[in-house]
Length: 172
Image (cartoon, rainbow, N blue to C red; front, side):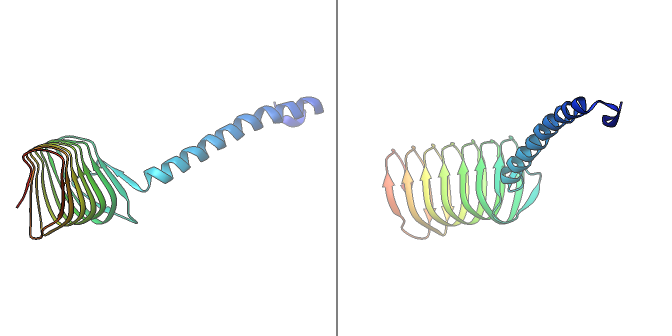
């Protein structure tokens, strides 16, 4: 039955009945698009073997046994997976929460390692906070290193500002 064959009072109710669900549908679609656009389009989650960070995209690696290369200027790179490796050109920050992760990086402002038994081969690091145990950090230049874990080693060409709150840590 078309809307025009209904009496005028029913036409109005029929239109209102369609308008509300349509308005809700459009509102949900807009909220989903905004949420996906803010996080989804500017965040890569578990990229395959390679990806390019566009416009400072953030990256989350959550799976285990990964191997990936990230080209370009990344925002925050957050690794919770274990037993993997990632090569990152540039990143604003890198956080490693997983175990037995290898990270290769050219330049990062902030490095945070809370996982254990990781190897980080960095070129230039602004500030590094090492909260896990038995991590090895290599690099040409570390500006500041804070140890919170135990038995960690930083091998760097310079002498960074050091704050050692753990035990058995060393800078060589």
